[in-house]
Image 1 (tube, rainbow, N blue to C red):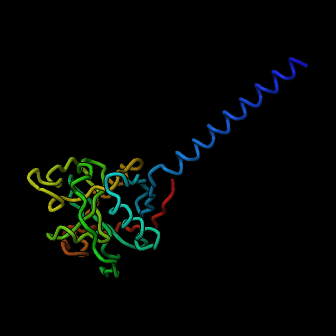
Image 2 (cartoon, one colour):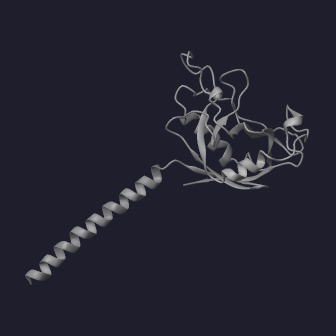
Image 3 (cartoon, one colour):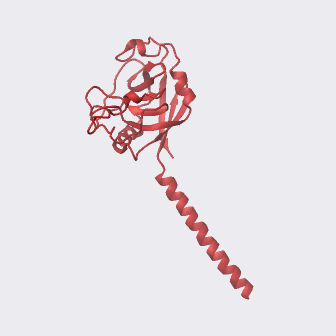
Length: 201
């Protein structure tokens, strides 16, 4: 009887510990940064979001992802050794309607190092909407200026490529001169199409 009671107590404690461990694991998974998979005509790559340092930028990007905005969009600008850019045009050069632009978050975001993804914008700080670029090298010149008192300069990094960077590098090596976008000579001659973008952990 005493042995059975000890076994029962041990089993109860073990079960409670396992339950707590499982709950902690589930909670950690739920709080983990979202991962976004890009399926392109040259292969897939995965980007992990950075909501802690760029919350509004991540929220904006994921909104477009969930709406299916990026399906059929092409990489319209390639600067070898520097960036590949997408989010603005389809293969025919058409633009899609976008939401209102968002505020720049460079005061808190990570540096524009190789493999990071950042929002593209015009010369106006708060002008980013759907376009983004992936850094092929450490482009620290794209970071917020040291003398910037707030969010007036630089390009906001909101994630990083965690798998498939070789695909991004392959995009950067295609022949250019496709005639799509604001810099026609910088677009791929054979369109590199984003077929689908999905989000999950």
